[in-house]
Image (cartoon, rainbow, N blue to C red; front, side):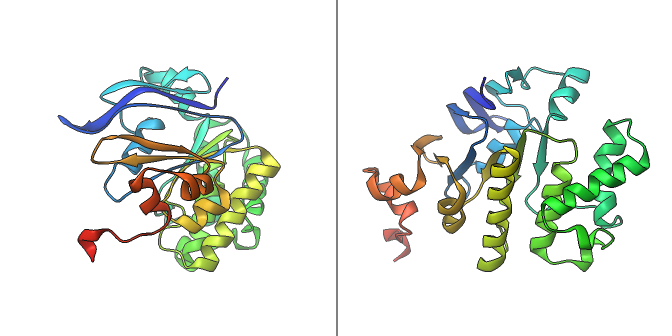
Length: 251
């Protein structure tokens, strides 16, 4: 069974199609990255994959379960089987880090407060933030907020985590620290990551496999190991992206 599978997926808003007839899959334990130029639909695709939006056509299977056509209790059951980290972290500013992580446990488990407290501290420890459990989001750095958001996404012990631009807005050193956290979680816990990113340093550091989206053709134009795509792709669009070559229009 695959961690995730997209079949003939078409996404968009209203009558506007962003991407069409996408077919790809993610294996358990992979760090899988969705990339492409600005405005090509990366984040929109991610939100369709984890059920925030419903696609215009096609299917998304998460651990073999069709989230596209699920409703009510069935949809809730599927959505509690994975975790999501939004681009800006989306922590609740009125709660400390510990309470942010406990929030989903309170909503979806029957654990008592002592048990939730212990588990939440374990999640924060996994991302190196246990000493900051009682800090408010405004009292920590942007990189720490991203790691706290990952801890919250792990609250219900998911096998799959969806991350939207985790390195956005971070300096190179902080971004590298976040990459190491993702690699450690993948290696030590076997978590599958589906990540939207355009940060090449992070992509080369952590990705097992990528797909590259193209807004003009509304399709996937490359798939595979990012370093091999950088060095061997014959597609000029792929070569330009991975080698950071300025377009002629920008010269």
